[in-house]
Amino acid sequence: MKKLVVLTMVVLIAAVVTISFTTKTAKNESYPVLAKDSVGSVKAFMSVYKVLKSARCMNCHPSGDAPLQGDDSHIHTMNVKRGVDGKGLYSVRCSNCHQAENTPGLHAPPGNPKWALPPADMRMVFQGRTPRQLALQLLDPKRNGNRTKAQLIDHMANDDLVGWAWHPGDGRTLPPMSRAAFAAQVRLWIAKGAYAPSAKIK
Image (cartoon, rainbow, N blue to C red; front, top):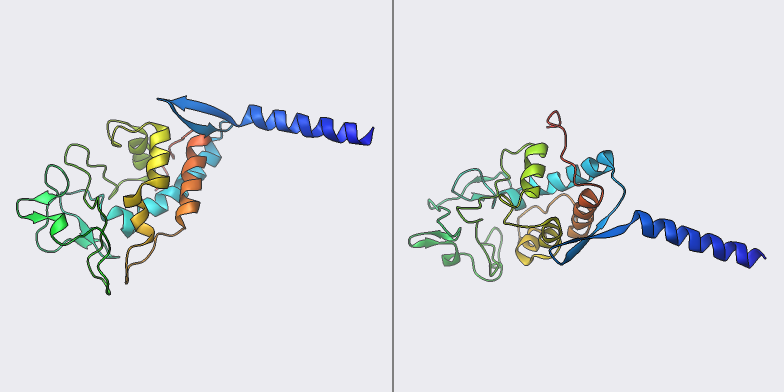
């Protein structure tokens, strides 16, 4: 009888978890959906925000058309500009210095096969954005690279250029949490309702 009671409880718990943690489909992609929780969602986003505002992320998401450099996010030297495709302008192309991998040495040019700023028609600015502004921007396909919520999670969790931030080469400070923890917070933010922080939160 005891075993039957325990088994019944396990089945009931599994049913509750299944109901509260469903799967939502977005353009043939799925992401977990939890019960709506504005407080928990915003709390998760604030962790995400700290990573996005770190130099490793923000330097490639500037408010202007010049990339930023260093832990202090100063303007890139050599008058580098975004260009239409985000890969530089005229003869000053990103790939002239930024190779497929980090160049060995302290503060040497970082590298990745996709090294670039976002293109001119989808600038995806992080610099100067408040938590609310950045959250709303990330959720807007017209401003986030035409991504659904599922694609946004995939981009932040799996894209190798995003992942470079955690392997930036010698002399560069890492984001304030591991990539796994960051990806988990992105999923939690969206799973709990993808709420944007209040305008009062700075």
